[in-house]
Amino acid sequence: MNGARVEDEVCPICKLDTYMNPSMRFLINTECYHKMCESCVDRIYSQGPAPCPYPNCGKTLRKNRFKRQVFSDVAVEREVDVRKRVAKVFNRRREEFASLKNYNDYLEEVETAIFNLVNKVDVEATEARLEAYEAANAQAIAANASLQTKEAEIAEHMRNLDEERRRQQRTIALEESLTEQKLKREVERKVIKELANAKEGEAENVVRKAVAAAQKTMQLKKSSARRSGRDSPTVSFEDAALLMVNSKLATPDTRDDLPYDPLKREEYTNDLYTVRDHYYDPFLDNIETSPQAKAAGFGVDNVYEQVLFEAFMGLGCFIENEKGRHKGVVAT
Image (cartoon, rainbow, N blue to C red; front, top):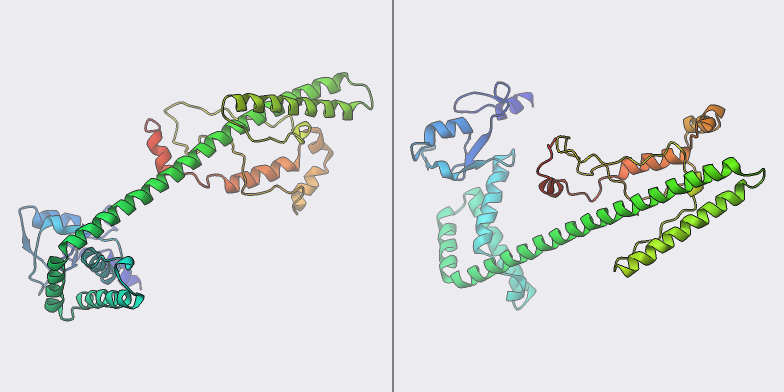
């Protein structure tokens, strides 16, 4: 196996390998599918057509017919090219046939032509049949090709719309998260301030009033959003009083000299997972019961949320499209 692997990494013409030249690229020509490195192609075919340097091949090759090898198996590469070529000629659709049997007979004819060309069986007769069919059905072939192009454009447009919708959802989620975090911090400051001046036994009432005030504030913001034509989803503040003092919202850095970050440190609401009240983790259980951890304001619920957030973050983020919108940021 190692010998075969090494052979695949060596150019059969100049005998250089990818160990000595890691950037080496192998190219093949659709005339004979013989592999050689890019340097050999430039050296042999830059002045014009020339014979294939493989022994006993003899086919004349042109530089513009070389392409990068996609599949490691040349036989698979050749079959894919043959299928693409035949599909451009035999491109009739199911709705053009009166019955399913006629359509299946047509597909069988297509597969027979592909088999003959791939396995070099009756190549001349198959090529002649392809040319005759293309000449006799040129108008229908062009119409179906145009229809396929339009369908591909529609599919691409739908994909772009879906990506744009997801991007807008991420933007809205970020805005909602920022609003929620801001209100939580306000609740936290208010609770701490009022608890400092509260009498014994009034802690529960202080927390309840603070949460009610936060909910009222959110309702006012929702009403304002409706008047502006944009409704914001309800954000729960039931756990607002439980927000720890050490919970901070990172402010995104917008400097252009930073490495590219497709998420831009955004914080999202999600519908991908639900945080349970407790997970089995002896280490966290021991810390949670520690007096030192309690004094520092440690809460395992923050750990659960952070771990799940990091596990699910980035789903639905199309990095290449995001890079296109931030060309000034250094990509990594």
